[in-house]
Length: 193
Image (tube, rainbow, N blue to C red; front, side):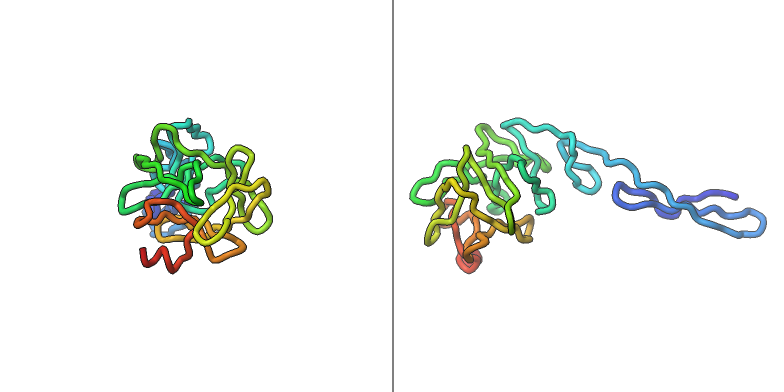
C-alpha cells in the first residue's frame, strides 16, 4: 500500500489519508488527527482561536470578534471600529457618555497606553460590565450611569464583531461618529449616524 494525504488535517478538522494497493488498486482511508494550534500574538495563525496561555498587560489585549470568546471574570477593552480607526470606550463618564480613547490594532492585538479596562461578569440573562466595583448601566435617553447593582447587557452578532445591548431597553453600547462619544444609542440611530 502507498499512502497519500487526500485532505490535510487542520487545527479545527481531521484530515484523511488514503492507502492504495499497488497491485489491485484496493484502498482504504484513515483519519489524520487534528493538528495543534500555532499561536502568534495571542491567536492561532490559522483559525484565529485565542491562545489560552497568552498573557496580556495593561498595554495589550487580544481583539475579540466572536461573542463566544467573552469569559466571565475577564478583563476587556471595549472597542469600536470607525472605518479602520479603533476607538476604545474610556472609563470616565461625562454628561452620560464616555469619550473615546484611540487605540491601535496590530493583527489581533489591541495596543495603547493607559488602556481603559473593563471587567465582564456572567449574570442571569447576559453579562455585567464592571469598573472599580461599580457597574455600567443604562440611565435615560442616550446616557449611561454607574450603579452598585449589576446591570444586564446582552451580546448579539454584529457586522465585524458583536454588539452589547441593554437587556431591559432597546439601547446598546455604540460609538457615535457625529457625537464622537460612546453612548446608549438605539439601532435606528446608529444606522443613520
